[in-house]
Amino acid sequence: MTYDDFIVELNKAGLTVRRFADLMGMQPNSISNYKKKGEVPDHLAVIAGLAAEMSAHEIDFEPVFHRLEPSRKKPRGASKPGKFAGDPQGVLELGK
Image (cartoon, rainbow, N blue to C red; front, side, top):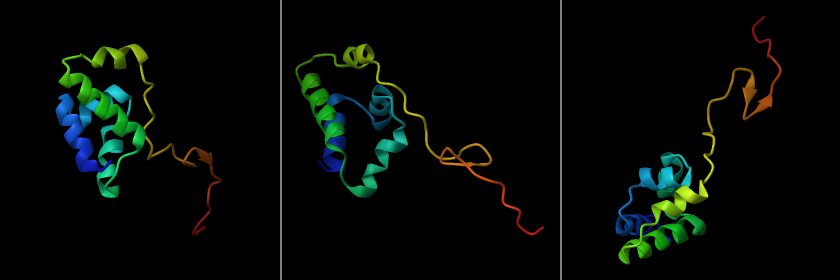
């Protein structure tokens, strides 16, 4: 599904990217980054489509997300000093 079609499905469900990400236990940037690629993964497309369909039939889908409690993903990016992507690094002795 294209990112634009995905947004249309979210709008049909009455969701923003931020709210969808919150329900999915994701960071909003993780979803909006798919705009660059132009497509979203199939699993997110199906979930957005199902939420839109449920909303069209006036079925509240949010309790399903709360019942399933998707686990929060840890944000990637900056890490502790001396580590890169979770791997320990030795201290470089540059300029000494």
